[in-house]
Image 1 (tube, one colour):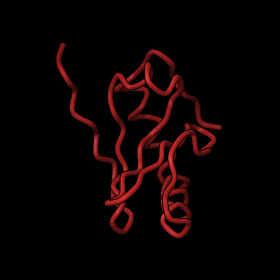
Image 2 (cartoon, one colour):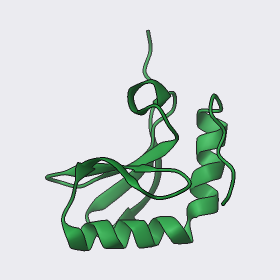
Image 3 (cartoon, one colour):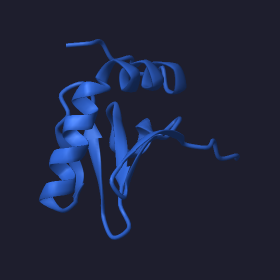
Length: 90
């Protein structure tokens, strides 16, 4: 077994946004990770709903705002890196 490196999509303050290739088995639907120094969230695509985890409210608002502005890029990256469940733009 080998590990594929996550795609770093951006950073919002001290929170890094990543798409992990071949990560559908764990979370069962298209998503991205927002990883902070003390906590993290998994955000569903394309609805930008929180699937798992928690993060400070201010960071969550900033990450979701960033994600809305970068939704097409997030979806395109997901579809390229983990095409088993493709995502369409809403």
